[in-house]
Structure formats: structure tokens, C-alpha cells
Image (cartoon, rainbow, N blue to C red):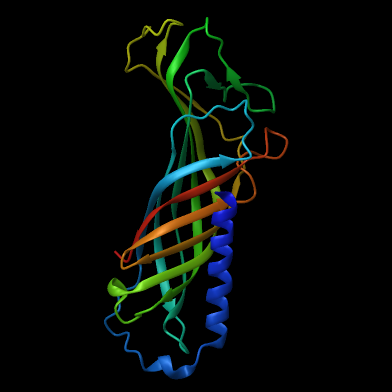
Length: 244
């Protein structure tokens, strides 16, 4: 899946830049008077950590939810292409099986993903959340730039982010036999940013029609800081809604 997404993003980048460089001036006749800019973009979908060792047991499908305010500036020589940039918040949630304990309170410099044996108490649900302030940049293509709501769209770009918050959330502490100790609504949280990469460097790609598009992304500089745990990268795929 990682190779497919990276290949798709690379193809979008090469195709968009090549077409922008070879475009003619005939598109300057396109009337953009009534064109709305993509001022607001929402992204949601699944996240996964690539190169994750077998000792880290995740559960179900990770999730992301991102919101950005964007400014879209069409090229003068060819309005089918535009340069977009903006800022917003990106969040990622990774879920773990009930026998994996993510200990953010450890005093060591390696983030432990501890396995709980079958005779010990455990949390029924656990997740790890990271929140970044992000600045996305995109090169975009519109098949119908005068009416983006009825246009095929392609976009390739990058995101630069800075870490705002990282925390774990564990719910429903149970005995080894599965009986709730404090009740199913019991929640424990741990917050610590020092294990995680302070900077998010991601390549992105989108393809779709109208306000909807398939969104892809790959954080290539690693989820954890160098030396603070295994080298893992975040892989994202989901739905984007833009043009609001």
C-alpha cells in the first residue's frame, strides 16, 4: 500500500508540473469571475504506521481528521492550474489491542509498547493521538476551472507541521477474566510530546470530482524521534471535501 500511494503521488507531481510547464496561452480566455476559491478543506480517513515491528500490536483502523483554510491562486498563463497554500490542524489516532500498553510516563528515552500477559489486568480500549499545526501546499489542476464544482481535480503537494500535542487514552480497566474494575466509562490519559517527531514532513496527493476527492499522504520523516523507538512512517488515505 505504501508503494502504491507513493507511486500515485509521484505520478501526480510529475504530470502536473509537466503539463503546467508545457501549457499554452489559450487558456487565458477562461472567465474566472464567478469561480469560488477552495477556502476551506476537510480531510478524514484511515491512518497506519508502516514498518511497524510485530511487537507493536495495533487494532482496527487508525483515523485522521484534518481541517485547513486554503488560498487558491490560478496561474495567469493557464488557469486550469493553480497554486494553493494554507494552514490548519491535523490529527491522527492509532488504536492498539487490549494487551498492548503504551506508556508515555516512562522515564526512559525509548517509548515502550508493553505487552500485558494473559494473567494481568488490562484496558479494553487504547489509542494514541498526535495533533499537529500544519501548512499544506498544493499544485492543482482543474478540468473546468470556471466551475470547480463540476470539474475533475488533481492535486499534489507537501505538508509541513509542528507538533502541538500527543497523548494516550485508555478506557475500561478490566481484570484478566474481562470484568470491569472501575466501570466501562473509566478513562485514563497520559500526555507527553518528547517521544514524537516535533516536525511533520509529508507528501500528499488528491484526485476527485467537484468538492470530493480521494486524499493520500505519507509522512516520510518518521512518527517517533530518532533513537526514541522504532522507525515508523505514517500512511494516510481517506476522503477530502474542499471548495466550501
